[in-house]
Length: 532
Image (tube, rainbow, N blue to C red; front, top):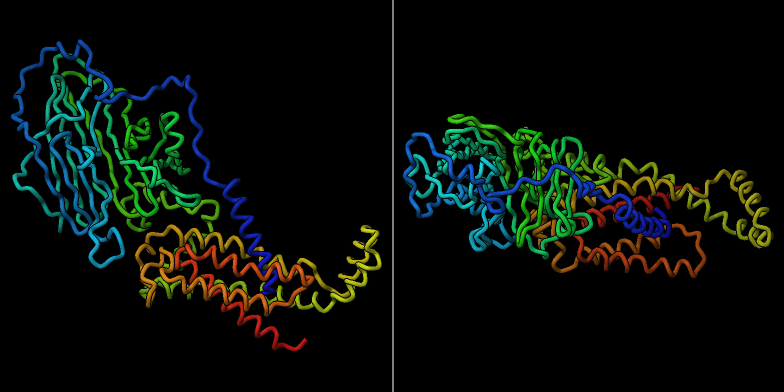
């Protein structure tokens, strides 16, 4: 590949990256007008029960004997450790056994959610109007006397029960041994003498810190899926006003670079209300208004996922959680590249060597195109003296010069764009692979060899970026050039510029670019050995 042309292509890559950021960044859902008639359902913290609710005389029923002291239960499996609390029947913390906070040998488990220090909990159950439920309502833990349970061979159900003046509430978690997903069932029975109306809410709460916000290609924040599109709401927009989705939401959650917490209400008529409250983001899912006659029960089922953004694990449940894995505009190209990368890994067992093998395959596919590109540039280089003569002769008449140049190209059967177009075709593949290597959890803490112990992090000693810069320089020197000496000197700066750019890139991406450069140098060497 012509190194000067390659450098031009690299410049185009940078420009296209910028254009992509401006014109193809994921669009935020349109905020609904302030005049929208469907207002968000108020939680128990925002709305007190009506006078009719508080003065109602309850029918005869056995009052639950609930201990005023908080009881916690640790649910342990090979995948996670989840702490439940009897106050609110909520989740207080979650850490993942198969993922570590850092790549150090003595690192602890990755903490996906921790609301203990901030008194924040998630999966809170509240309600409005006649279904009013305080968020801090104390529950009784049914049929569990131990402080922990182990989910090993079969699913385990954990049930909490409580009462208000009008309601008997039963909240059941169902945990599975080989999944990051679990089910939630909430049933409410009307124990008052008259019918009541209202909505039930289930809230996913996630601590928010400005330092955790994402980058141009890594979204961090609330995310929802409507069955067709992935809807991302920037926290900066939530500071101005909350977001309301009145229906058709399959699931709503909170995503980071590698992990996601999400709820599927199994009811697309539910309303989703997303807001920034103090130090956390709340995804509140509210049922439609229901009427519950005396001594009647209503039940609501949810699926929850708290874990890594790994396609197979997300897709296993059948709740469309895998839709969170999206590579943006180049998703149609990026997805098969990830499939191929995983296929190689299944045999090799090392993502670094899998990236190298994938790079070789991509190079083989584009070999004929780059071969044609190099030959075209080599041919153009030989014609430079004649082209220079034409420019000197017709330089003052641009129209005549263009006519003569076109005739010249036709006579010698060369295409001035022949060296650029094959390289431009490869740019989408680079973008797609960049997105794959940048955000795939499979590369998080994935070792390669020697000093590279994490392909998702930069090279700690900057060795591979420096070698990459050297190979880029060699590639440029080996490429036929059609530029004047001044332009050539300017383009020689590009390897330096790209070396500095790649210093902080994920080492997996640097490995790809380095191997691609080496293969390109090999291809240029073979072309130069061919007779004219």
